[in-house]
Image (cartoon, rainbow, N blue to C red; front, top):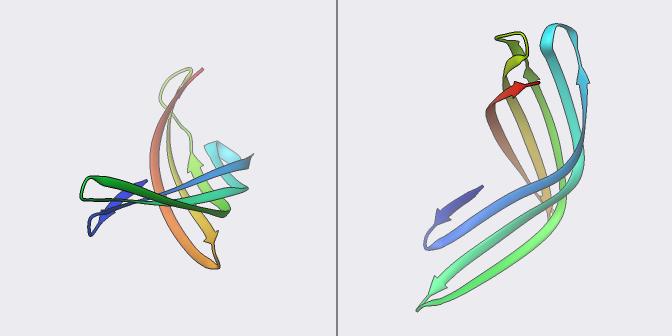
Amino acid sequence: MAREQGGATVSRGNLTGSIITRRRKGVFLKAGLGLANVSVRTKVLGVTTTVSEGGLGTTFGAGYDIKLGRNFYLTPNADILVQVISGTTRKLLLLTLGATWH
């Protein structure tokens, strides 16, 4: 995820291994632990500079499989990513909609 702020582009990301537990009637929960990264890219007088720093990343989420056909599902999902980098904690909310066919 990238966002431009005052001439700088800030990017954040998580790489986590997650465990997904299946609940009743299509509901699932997930939790994961891994790595987080934040990068800041600036461009001044044609010179681009990038600074990156890493730390701990976690993921907590829930979703629901909505059956639309014999093998087709629509899956709304919400995740909270928690990043701890250099002693600073940041939280990101991700809302996604997926489609699964199997």
